Image 1 (cartoon, one colour):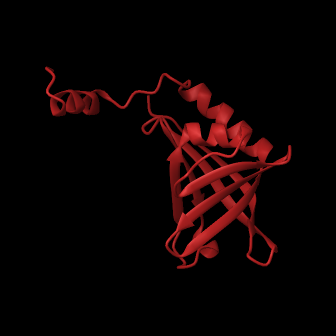
Image 2 (cartoon, helix red, strand yellow):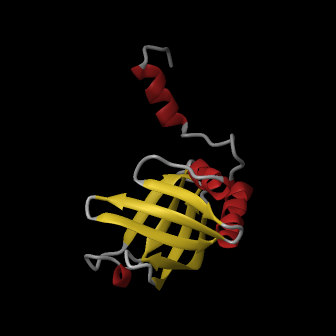
Image 3 (cartoon, helix red, strand yellow):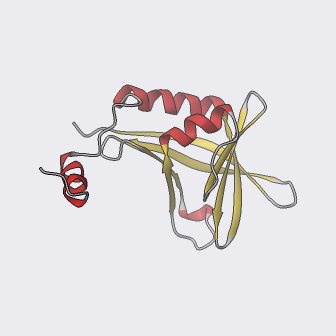
Length: 138
């Protein structure tokens, strides 16, 4: 069964000058990509006027809600008990977005009702391809 969860949420873009700008975002999870979560930003809040989706590991979101996590293009860290910072690193610079931690916790809990942590599968085709790639028998 293919299930997609979407949770619209508000966030705050933190500028270099320390100003906060309210922006909309949609948290998204799909059973077809069980290891990932997605954050969609509409075109009117992006630099190039195109809608943007950032995709990263669901486990990273869970880790980042408890302690600083991530070393690559997405980094997540708690900010007190009620907020969480998500940093997106790109060639154009870094965008720091502050979310209500409760929104992220609620979203993450909802993803676990679709596919529990540790029960993710990448699909038979990928599993078969990996076995073949590494010299195993199918």
